[in-house]
Length: 170
Image (tube, rainbow, N blue to C red; front, top):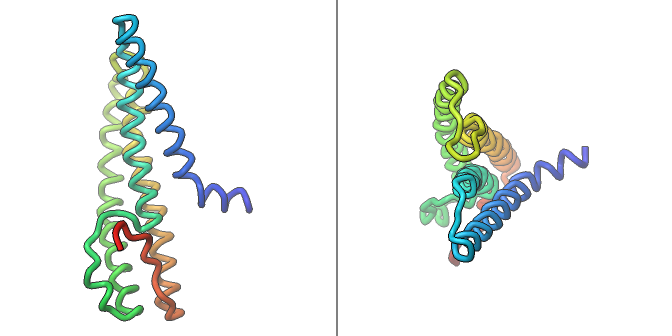
């Protein structure tokens, strides 16, 4: 059970670190190859591009988890705890509906790519692996939204202050 808690707590963090290191290392190698040897590869560019795509989607899930996504919360400072919880629950439900619809439609692209066997230009790897970034990202977002929803319901029921996440500027 402890391993599941650690995965829940740190999964996005470790995935973000992995893709970021892969992106930076590949980019550094490609810059050195280009500047010193006047040679570059198409696969390096593809690895950087697809790492960035996975970074963005996993980062979106991490932002939902920490309530760090962009929002205008001026009105939240003037609301009592119960109203804050209700407003956050409403926002999570709207975002959940959008994420479920987007998850459904994101599988269409993956399905078409798998059906026709499309591969990347440089790596010659099935594009399905890279197109799966969108459904994986939305699945993580949905999971984090459900957790947020449950946390807010507990706050509403117990009358405790709702989790607001960190602020960028104080």
